[in-house]
Image 1 (cartoon, rainbow, N blue to C red):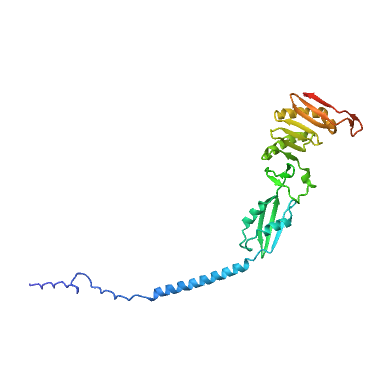
Image 2 (image 1 turned 90 degrees about the vertical axis):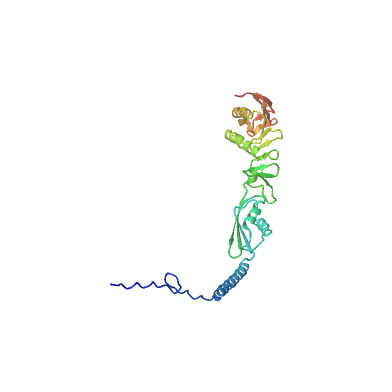
Length: 286
């Protein structure tokens, strides 16, 4: 039996194997999209510029000049009027634009001012808290030093009838403040414990030391063997000098194992007894 021939394979319309898919139609370019982006950007720029202008205008209105300065702190050596005068000459800027750090630094550079803290109080007030330098001793003829050995100048409104007049008096070459302060602390500890006291300490240009005791008598120690010479004095002080301290003028400890003692001229002391004008050498009281 004759079979029918197989039908010939069909070819695609394009003459190629595979399914035929028509290409999508090409769309025209959308020119409106860039215009929308540009328009929105312009709107934002205008809004930003308007907001910035309003902010600047408001800042200028709020940044008014400082109208009042309030000063607090335990002030003894500077006055509020003096500080207000200094500050008024440094006020550059308004309530917000004032450089507070610079203002504090310039105030701290003034005599007798140790530190300054500043803050604003709405709407136009400046609050200053002042901490003064604390003088620990008088230096030279008319100055003072703080705990760091820094020299504080005497000012016209410093009242020397206050506690400043009772501070220890230190004298020495320029630049030797810390050395003299350290020596004072060392000598004062020993002499105060013995009841002799120490009012004044002097260091000369050659490094020699002279002390003024609590009752006004002078103790000369010189440059060498300071501890040994001071010990000789303390022994003699306990044995004899303390009982006659009102008559004592000068003790020179610059001797080997001895001291030279000078007394007031002969006369009557406070308890009515006589004393002589003695100048003698005491040899090793220990």
